[in-house]
Figure 1: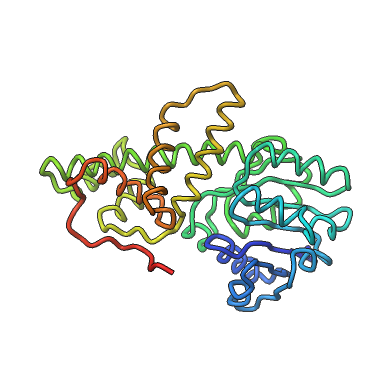
Figure 2 (figure 1 turned 120 degrees about the horizontal axis):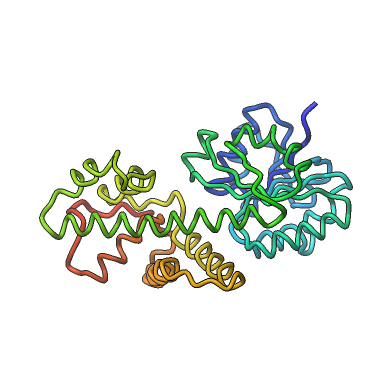
Length: 303
């Protein structure tokens, strides 16, 4: 018999992940701050509070926006942690600071509850397809227990003790952000110099400059599609976590510092709800009137 799951956080990533677990026949209860988002999932059972969601759960999965939100949902007033039974397993698949993950692991261990920090990469496309890269920190025993769940969501790797999953996510996000910036600069350079940026992108694919970022985000930049799969403000939050981790390790990461400043300016210019690839817009602002194509910007409607 499969373990009962409580899934907290039904956002851009959480919704398709929860849908995959439900489709696989897992016994799952959902909670989300905006209840309607959880109720919109076919076949969902929805709890009114985090504590109510986990009362009968063997496994708790969180997929929340920030570390402070995870802290509040788990340990705030009416939070989930107090309602968890001894022997349960907590899997935090949110992107949180590594020190917070280590703190949560210690707090749960004191109560006989397992813990994995297991953030993901692959975006909404990967969440829907079940092809997420899952970076897990924690014990080998807890990882083995979680593997049947992870197998429904993507490819999981145990990268070290608690907190290591979040460190791996920092590494992932550093590569993603810097590469988005590099692709945006290259395509803008091509357009401003008289080449066809779409043809340049095609020419680069298959060579050393090829990447998923060039393939997916590069295409969306050329189409000027900035509807969010991952929001700029979330990328900025991750960039701040990267720089905090670097400071703790006594490292200076100039490329990450530069791209963090660009994302901060993008957010301050009103781009917080745009996709990560909207870094292109900040580069165009700096280099006005240079622009990648004449297609109107695809942006989410203002609410």
